[in-house]
Length: 349
Image (cartoon, rainbow, N blue to C red; front, side):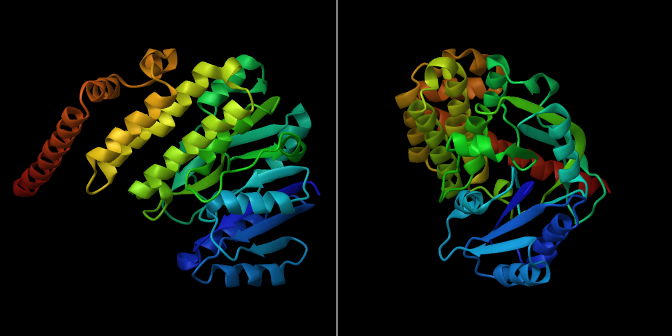
């Protein structure tokens, strides 16, 4: 088997989302591949939709149903265990791919000898094969034979996992998998996995369609999801520690943890959660300092974190309460300006 495509599915039966994804996969321009769809204990008709595809395309589609929900990481691990392909790909069940997506990635792998191949993706807000806003994942200085410098760059910015294919032998050899039971599993797996591949190439085309809708994980912020990002970052750190990667990649791991566990979570929590709590903000800072008490001296932090964010973080270092109140006041003023600015436009019409 040349390729196994793993599709984690949870409650995607509505609005034709799951059918659009599956149709893009069954119409790929390659042969000798399998689609492993893992229904993660959906409460809607997703499992029935998948079973219908399995009956219609025997030998191409295999459906596995979880009795309990394990989140996307658990579904992906189930798919990995069942996969028989030389190559592994992942597709989110609300997204879709170009017909020649896998043909082009596999050809690039064959032509170059790469063990990991990616592409760019297109942001779209409706079910269409027309190209939307193109996002270029992984710049050229991350591709080619992966020496330590390129591994450092991938560790910092590994890019999306769904736009890549991975040689399965590397995954098996190094025991690579996903954390289960949490959102943001790729935040842990993506950077770590990148360290074990030796040759990364790219097809410079937007062959993956990333569907932008309000129910997706990135558009709906809750404290639970913020805690899941913290867990993903903590698991990433612990896995790096267990695999003895801290000595060689210490600064990169420190910054990646700081960014995922703390900085991104802090500002998304305060801006996205309806009633943020000071106790959570304190907990975030404490968890970071327990692992990296001198994170503000990290070269990557100084270079890659925005000046305003650094100032806000420094303020929190002086006083959690002052930071919390100041940030909340800034949000309030911003909302007022937006409200009255909109009102002014309406009055001018």
